[in-house]
Each structure stands twice: as C-alpha cells, then as structure tokens.
Image 1 (cartoon, rainbow, N blue to C red):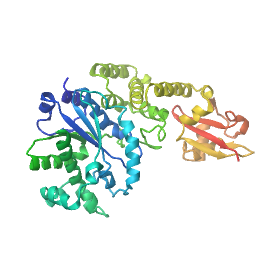
Image 2 (tube, rainbow, N blue to C red):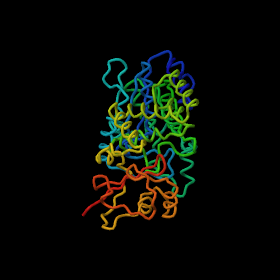
Image 3 (cartoon, helix red, strand yellow):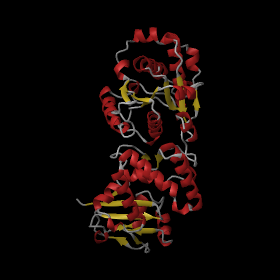
Image 4 (cartoon, rainbow, N blue to C red):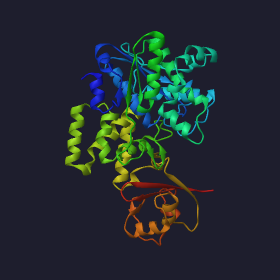
Amino acid sequence: MDLYGELEWRGLVYDATEGVRDALAREKVTGYIGFDPTAPSLHVGSLLQMIALAHLQRHGHSPIAVVGGGTGLIGDPSGKTAERQLLTVEKVEANVAAIRGQLARLLDFETRTAPARLVNNADWLTRLSAVDFMRDVGKHFTINAMLAKESVKRRIESEDGISYTEFSYALLQAYDYLELHDRFGCTLQMGGSDQWGNITSGMDLIRRVRGVKTHGLVLPLIMTSAGTKFGKTEAGTVWLDPVLTTPYEFYQFWLNADDRDAVRYLKFFTFLDEGRVSDIAAASVGEPEKRHAQRELAREVTRLVHGDAAVHDAETKSASLFSGDPSTMSNDELLQAFANETHVVAFQSDGWRVQALLTEGGLTKSIGEAARLIRGRGVRVNGEPFLDETKRLHLQDAKDGQLFLIQKGKKDFLLVRIERG
C-alpha cells in the first residue's frame, strides 16, 4: 500500500491538494509539520501529527519536524477565541528542548536513508527584519485574502478582535514553507484541518517567488463520539511528558476510550496493519465486555510514547487495582499511579468520614450522593467493601498509616494521603 493509501484507510486524510497522491507515489518527497512550543510538552492531540510524519518516513520519504521557536513567540490564531499569552525567548527555548526528545520516540533522526530532521524556525524568523519581511513576503498577500480566512473572521467578530501580531501569523508560516523549500527541497506541508488556510498561503508564496508547485495535506481534528474534544479529561490535558501525566494515567486514558472510538483510534494512533485492526474489531464485536480494542490501544500507544517497561508497569498496576486488591502495590506505586488524583488531608485524631472524602476528592457531588453510594455497595476502601455510612476511617485503617485508596464503582479511584504535621 502506498503512503496516501495508508493514510486514507486510516482516516487520516481530511483534505489534500490535487496531485499529492501522484507525487508521493512517483518520487521521494520531503514533507513537514509544525509543532507549537508554547507548553513544556506535547500532548495526545499532537500524536496524530507525529504519527503522520512517522508514516511519511516509513514509506521512504523525508520528514521534517519544525518546532516553532519563532512563531511560538507570537501564537497561531487558528482555532483560538482569544490571543495567547506571549512567552519569553527563554521559556520557548526550554519548551523546544523538552519537545525534541518526545519527537525522537517516533522519528528516526539517525538513519542514513530518509533521515528525519528537527529544525527550529527561530533560526530564520528571528533574523528576518521587518522591512525585508514586508518587501519579500507581505507584498504577495492581499488584505482581502487574509480577512477571508475563517480563523481571522471569527476573531474579528469577537469582542477582543485580533492583534496585528496574530494577524501576521499566516505570513510567517508561509515564509517557513518557502524557507524549508529552499533549504531542504520541501514540497509537502501537513497539519490539522484548521491549518488549511496557512498551508495554502505557503504554497501560493512558493509559486509566486519560485515558480514551483508544492502540496498540502491536512488531517482531521478529532472529536470523541460523545462530542467532546479529544485529549481532554476531567483531570485536564493528557501530556506526553511522564511527569505531567504519569505513564499509568496515560495508559488509563486509552484504556477508557469509548467503544465507539476505540477501533478508530487504533487506525489513527498505532502502526497496526489493516488485517490486525480488522481482527481486533471483530473480537470487540464478539466479546465487547473484554474491551479488546481498548486494551490493544492502551498497550500500543503507551509503548510508542513511554516504552515497554511503562506498558508492563501500567498493566501490572491496572490488574492489581481492578482485581480489587491494591495491597499488592506499594505506597510509592500508588502515589505514582495517582499523581494527579491524590487528595491530601490533614491528620485528625477523630478520623475522617468517607462521605466527606468522596465529595472533597471529586468522586461525588454531595455528601448525600456519597451516602447513597455507600448504602448501594458502590464504595471500596483499600480494596475492601465499605458498607457502614456511620463509620469513620482512622489512622490505623490507612495503608501503612499513610494512604486510603477509595474506589467508586468499577473505574473511579481517589487516593487520599494523610499529611502529618
């Protein structure tokens, strides 16, 4: 299967310029995707772009990951309702350094055949004078065309409007494409579907100043079947950095995928071939209670981002928790597994009401709901059913005198850590 066909069956082609498929089949193409360095880590929403570049390389083409150290100082208005906070040069550089290692998990920068490149657009944008920019780039774009862009129109109609800084972003990205074409012979830019206008601006600039036809291909923006934005949870963004989102939490994010999304995500976020995905889909239909697709998804994506050891660790912890026997896990393992779901309480000589812990920790909305849950046998503490709503937990009930693992139903957990003065 050629690269375009591969991307197509996986559902990764939202739109493409005419001639992309022929170019990818006929010649070795150099293509790029830009990554935003306005946070100290990429997140699961960035994985689709990383996977697309990896597919490009696996089919013998040359991928370029452009970290926007220059454009990151400004911010892309696409998909945004308000202007981003401007970052300092030092902060952007620190974020770029962190992102490099995450990209290297999927891209091969060492191979001699079609090696991946990592470049920072600050290398050329920060050296570009305002006069040169207006003369060599700005003259090729009309205000009419820029105002017609959907991302710009939405911001103009908003209460805060759009600054000249963000208004000029499309021109800077267009200049990136020109610079990459001149430096590396790049003829393909990829990105999310919200980048279509920026990509075609770059193609127009190259055509005007170099007389060369280039290409664009955009990937879908993912929404869950429940209608929520992909990559957002109640706990917040799911990051690729293991400090910001632990490998266990990362694994659980994929394991908890909706049945309606799991097979689709296998196509998007793994390199499993069509036959293997079809087998998993059939098994999921035949035995939905075993969640075949979710388990394979969690295993494959966690392996890609964090490695085999993280998969083994996450599966071991998951088996311990969902078997109802957290006693097999050490306190350190529990604290790591629930790094972002730990509720700290001060020592109280008269102990703690479980209803209060459930409510304060966010597992229930009210004390009354918590009490009803206990009466309905829906609560476990440190693996044991908690059935008496009048009973208080005391220090001697805590795991090693430090932790309570409270479980609501089958999937929701809260780790309570006792802080002793």
